[in-house]
Image 1 (spheres, rainbow, N blue to C red):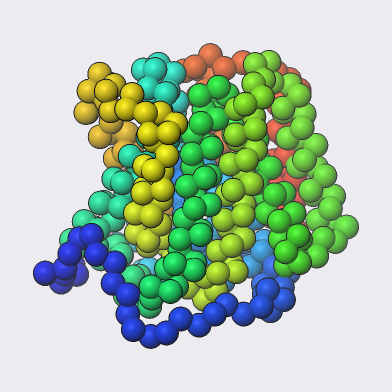
Image 2 (image 1 turned 135 degrees about the vertical axis):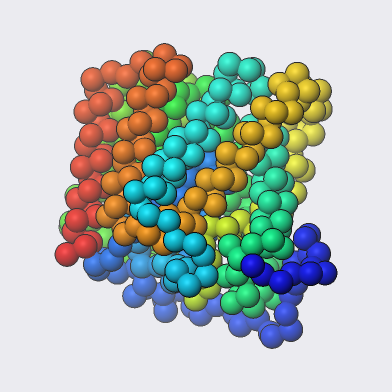
Length: 380
């Protein structure tokens, strides 16, 4: 238990050591080489469906693999065995899968069944609860002891955390907006394109050289996603653009973490501790212009219990992610993520009546084969 008496729950301290400007991008190219490694993901945003918190010293193949949410990628994190209670992989993996799936299905239930279609407010609400929750955990537990190893200066916060937080906010808002018009199953299929987006963005920044094997994998995953989109019976252009844009924002965020936060190791909760406040403020700023006061008027109609439990499930996913990355290897996380996505697609069909065509099944299968081909080739 941390002794945090007298600590303000809402204060971010900025130590005195000066900020060192990031090295030129060319010096990072070796970090994105196509070499053996391990990987896995976190859920969607604030436990959404994709957790935050990737280590800034990840190799490129680690960045690409996804179990996600939220596309879920396994970061290189500090050892937590001597700081946090270790849970068996057989226990924590099912918990993580259940929470990750529950967050997505719960949000879809709010939007569709309860007609609470305010994704910007929901995102800001989750992030606000996450900001409060991480500070309570900081004061009462040792789950955020990783903060003690990070020298967060004001300059580092403004130059790195803030721009990454903007990308994070954009990803969450766009992804949640897509759920208003697209099925859960179709969105999960589109998220399979995230590794391709990361590769292309990395290549654009000259951080990754695309060899023939990577190009084949890119084509395989891309073909699968195109077939999945082509086979969608209830295709809606606005939702499709939102989800594709969300993938672009999330992929850019993960690449920027490598560039701007080199050497900093943050697990999902530590990342959330820094990102949640700024993201909540950014999202809240857009509420009056996009959704007005309707979310507040309808809040009581939905019920405080529903809203609080929704935020609790989202925050619980981030806590589960901390334990998950300490007990499971990259391949296990990748397989767990694939199983979770298949479970989500099946659940969407059962609970929301989302139809799936044979073309979509074939296309999504191609995308999964591409993901596994990438994983196995990078592990040799």
